[in-house]
Image (cartoon, rainbow, N blue to C red; front, side):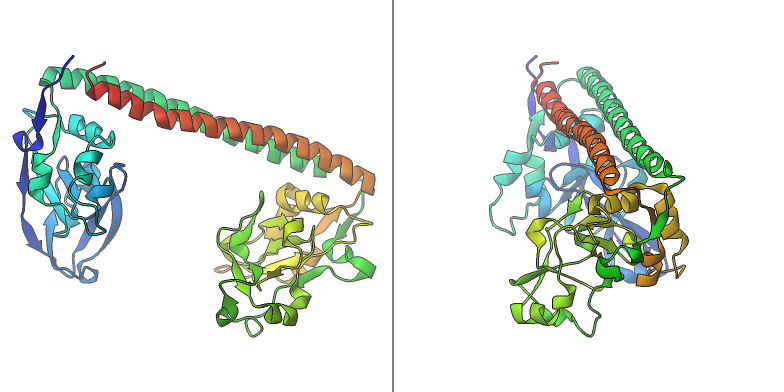
Length: 399
């Protein structure tokens, strides 16, 4: 059906009303998410922390428009949980006449991104602010209320099904990951007759293989440069491998001074403090010669006795090893670790061929989990694309 196109001025009214912020009262502030993703809570704080004392009070169901960010989708409907939130004069509030336009109809139209071209036309500079009169001049389809109710009900029905499908897929993924973790623990529990040995005994020529990264006196923030020899920190260490989005670097001459902290292929890195405690990964060949910071331990194994991926699997997923690591934590408020504690963690040590067989078996299971993850990402992308397509059809009168 062909829907009439109207200006927003036909059913919204700009409301501009300010209050004085009291230093001893708590206020909630909203955040208008970009790219037409709606409005969420930003923070809740004492009035004394709010610098601008003249603020507007938002009401649920109003249209909230960010003066600057409107051009990148900073527009949304105030949700019920943010009724009474305060916003500065850099936001515009509009009451909606629901005798003409349902709040949900306008909300779904905003979320569809259909205002994108109209907002972009207001300016292209970094400070392309829009004014209330610009918002009032925006146009959108507005069928009779009965038709709005019908289409909104169809949209919400699909939205519910999409969310159910998303939750179902997430549950399946969590269950798959839990099964893998349980299987890893089962594998390492099956060595009742196999001697368990402390990590400190796995070094070359009997040396303790656990090495702490350089102390603060050896490596300062001022030593970091934009380019040079990469330095790995806890933020780079993840069980699925290293991540290089944020790498520190030092000059070659500084790296030479810290050569005892350099890395080799198949070294194991262990995060030693804070919320990241216990995260582990193996060093890939591309990181040969890189350095680490003092927030990490490096474990360098005698590979004639222990297969590094076997040790990684034990530290990463085996319950009997996990319980040893976290049962020794020192410091209740800021858990930390030292070389002695890590060196005393015991790992079962079957013959090397058996270690390799177990790693191959676990790698096969991991590959299956990775396949499930990949399918999950594909289905998530399909679900994410479904709603915009449906909204486009809805506002074109094709439902």
